[in-house]
Amino acid sequence: DPCLGIDAMSGVENPTKVKVFCDGGSRGNPGPSASGVVFLTTDDELLHAFHRFLGVRTNNYAEYDAVILALEQLHEEGIEEADMYLDSELVTRQLIGQYRVKHPDLKPLFARVKELEVGLTLTYTHVLREFNKLADEQVNICLDART
Image (tube, rainbow, N blue to C red):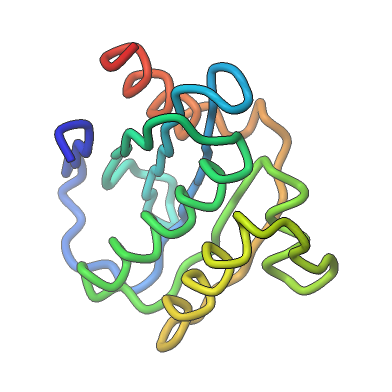
């Protein structure tokens, strides 16, 4: 994907645990969408910032894709433990089992997240948008480049 950008920005090599901020966004709902992910060390040093363009999707689809993108990258880098932060209350509550996934478009995404969770130690925490600015910035960088 031409919009997938990965930047290694920290001198930290091979962390075993990271903080991951995920965000998805859609300009229009549905509309042009992207997912954005930021990896930080446990000391809040920036490790990676990346994004993926999704075409015309809903906001909730983009939120799920951000989690999938993050989990795929955790596996690729061999990082086994992450604290995941999302500003989508719906997706957070679905992933921790408080809400059921009812929308047919989200069910396969939820299933993919559950597949990718295998072998990882994860926590999911809902954060307010103002605490997810770095991931939101990745979404907008991607959408600005594509729309």
